[in-house]
Length: 271
Image 1 (cartoon, one colour):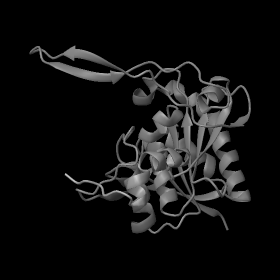
Image 2: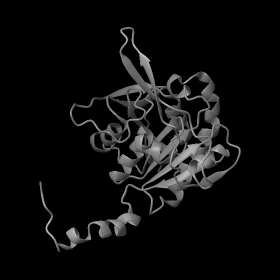
Image 3: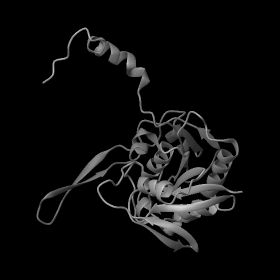
Image 4: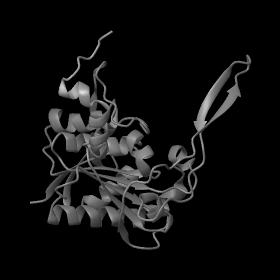
C-alpha cells in the first residue's frame, strides 16, 4: 500500500512548484493536494481565527485537489481535521525562492506549514528552490520551470528515504533548500543568522505622502556549515528544525538575573 502524503505550499494552488512536487511524489505515494487558493508567501505560521475558511474541491492538471481560502497553516489544519486525510507525511513546497537562516524560517509560509503539521503530530518536510532573480518569486516566469527537473529528483530522494527509514527522532521539521544549479551533493546544515540585508525604500504617492517598501539584497555567503553557505556552494541543504524555541543556554543567566525572585527570598513588587 502506498504511503499517504498531504502536499501544500505558500505560493498558491496553481504554483508550478507545487505541481512539480506532486509529479515527483505521485509515482510512489498517495498524494492529496490541499493548498492556499492564492499567494501566501511570508505569512509564517499565522492562522485564520477571526474568519471562516472555505475549502473547494477543484481539478488542476487532471488531479482533484482542495483550494483553501486561507493560509498554509489553515490548509494543513483543514487537511488533517476537516478532510481527515491521516497522512504519513506532510510536504510543503516546492517553494519558489530559498528559505534559509533564522530570518527566513520565522516568516516562511512554506516552513510554517511543515511546522504546523509537526505540531499536530505529523512529520513535515519543507522544500525550497533558490532563485537567481528575487522577482521570480512573484512573477514565476516560464524560465524557472526548467530547473524543476533537478528539484523533483531531490523531492523524490529525500521523501523516499524518510518514508523508508523514518523521520529523525530529535527533529520536528526537515528544511530542504535546493540551489538554482545543483553542483554538489547533500549537506546537513545548521541555520545561518541572516539571509537579507534588511532595508526600507521610501517612495511618495501622487499627493506627496510617503509609503515604504521593505527590501534589501541577499547576503552572498555565511560561515561554513550553515544552510546559506551550502546552497552558495551548490549543495542541497538539509536542516533539522525543532518546534522548541527554548534557549537552554540562557537558563543559567536568567537564574542569576532573577534568582531572588525565583527563590522567593524577596517579594516582587507589582505595579
